[in-house]
Figure 1 (tube, rainbow, N blue to C red):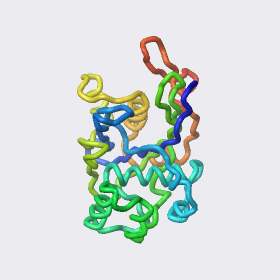
Figure 2 (cartoon, rainbow, N blue to C red; figure 1 turned 90 degrees about the vertical axis):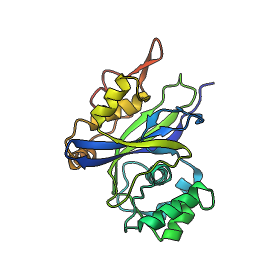
Figure 3 (cartoon, rainbow, N blue to C red; figure 1 turned 45 degrees about the vertical axis):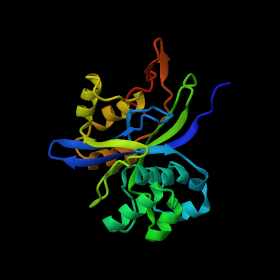
Figure 4 (cartoon, rainbow, N blue to C red; figure 1 turned 180 degrees about the horizontal axis):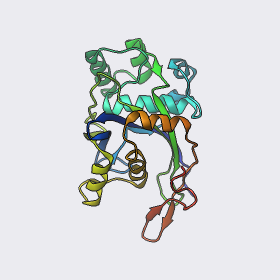
Length: 238
């Protein structure tokens, strides 16, 4: 029986530099059951709390066309995995770090953390960008929504050293070149998103594009030898 894809959400966190856009990438733990040691964007699967009325009430602003649970989960995973919180009002750095550590230790969950911080989530800060669905031939399948966002001002991205390690800011072109040299391991959707993001000179340009682009769900084709490709009709349109 083919595995059903699990709902997931991921955020491509970006910042401007004199040399162009950089994105934040994390290396997944070697013990991870899904894509161990691969460099990925912050993200993960949706849980029941992400779908709750309480979670929806914490979101402020426009979240369409993605469902609110995906937006909430994308912000939650970004905070858990790299310590960046897309909140409406600024939260002091020391309070963010303490709250995140308590989450990693299992003392508090994300909903409780938002109450502790008296924080509301800025749904307008992350822009829905794409939807990718893992092909049926892959054992662990995901129906993932990808967002793009500017790194929150005054916050520092740090890998959680639990699920993710070796957080890096990299220009998309440099990350792709490292993959070509076999210095970094990445999966096909990460590579294709880096190619897309790398075409923009600034984060403002990327966000403006995300605000107007259409989203066509992508399920990659699988070629002999387990190589992936985008259906020709979808290339540069998704």
